[in-house]
Amino acid sequence: MTRQALVSYFYQSAFTVSMQKTLLVFSYRQTDIPQVAENQRLSDQDFSGFNNILVFVPSASAAHHDPAIYDWKQSFPITYILPQEAASKAPRAANVRVCREGDSFTVGHCEVSVFGSTDMGVSFLATAEDISVYHAGDLNLWHWREENTLRNIAKAEAAFYEKVADLPKDKIDIAFFPLDPNQGGLYDAGANHFIMAVKPRVFFPMHFGGRTEIANEYARRSLSRKTVTFALTGVRDSALIDLSVSPALIRSNLPQKPSRASNRGSVDLNAYVHEDPFAQTDLPVSINKNPKNEGE
Image (tube, rainbow, N blue to C red; front, side, top):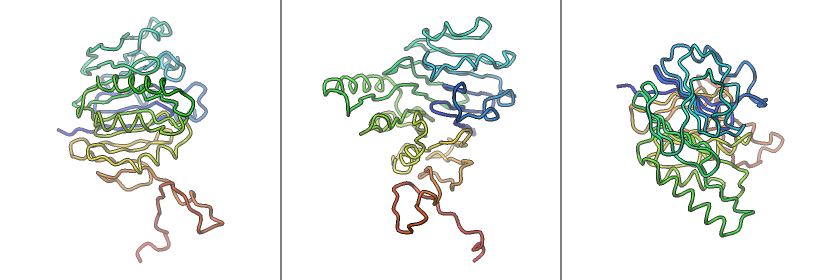
């Protein structure tokens, strides 16, 4: 059985995962987001052909719950899955499934498990067509190490480890998890622990805002025997994940060569200062062959 999914990134924590007959939409937001141009927003064309469309809202905050999601045609087989505190914002006409941490249920042919967060809301694990997808919402190690007391840091770590311990190990195929550079030092501590503890097959960083270099660099240097880390940083950037092989094979519309063990985000030589050929950068660099030299 072919196990493939197309992952598309929009902005911040918003992703879609397209399978043969299932579409998963996570934390979608377009209002007050200038990075998402009108012609890049989700539209009717994106919903056509799916038998089951699940729209996941991790929390009631504006960062995760955009009222625009209720403007989509209700003739599509859409189910909105959201925590209790967000339910009041949903119109009565919408097909809504209210949930809380610890719930497990089935929507169509998709199994949904609701897990906790270390901030507002919940996180979700959805399994459809033999592919499991986890979206962390705001679950992260929010240590704020450079401004917090040692006691508060220890409490944040304990709370985070407890929530991660509830997640299934070695069973998640695709995971979306925060990588927030606003935390300063050790901003990737939560992501590192999540990968080591849960061991998802493919890991996508999110919640990095406009700091795309953070996501690209993390993908470049993140090495794990069981997890391939891949960065999608531009609106509508996408990656086709083939889970029928091991390690998972990723093909992307980004200008980089597909590989199984070392899929990494990249930037071009503009990362260098052209006036100084000896300038250094710690950004990952993709060197493209000069077209004039092709065939040599």
